[in-house]
Length: 209
Figure 1 (tube, rainbow, N blue to C red):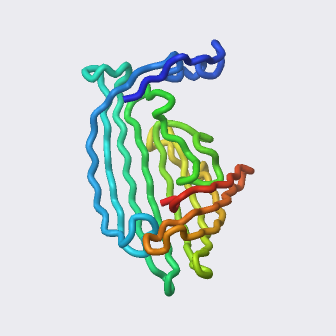
Figure 2 (cartoon, rainbow, N blue to C red):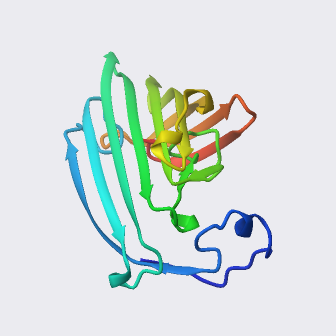
């Protein structure tokens, strides 16, 4: 459930021109299910195994929702030990909304600390999102480690809007410090940048994915 209220925006501006759903405030309520497969050897920083999750939520009038739409998310990850304790982590992530009237805060948002680092979260928004991420993790000394990452993805109003020429790209690197070596819980400092001038610095607990 989500309720958005006391919205203050400039009448006649972009929200009105684009007919953005939820610009006056709204209430949405939905029900959903999720299915998860997880055989990773560690939840915080695995070096082998796979993770797959699909979940969907349907928002409808019978639950009191002002707006009807369906959201489906697919998250696929794999982790491979390449050399000694060096790890290659890969992720494919898809976020899809099915409706022409999806409230603005429920739209897919490209960017952030966990996906497409280098773009701020919400730099691009639309109904659908598709992102591919790769990260190479290397222990250096004691509790310290380094990573390098590269990402590509895009948003679209429908899946058919995706185009190779419109893909966004970002890349970067980071420093890791193990707060808990036995649990592999890392403190991370990442810097990401893109070819079109977007960049970001992230200080977080736990890996991006």
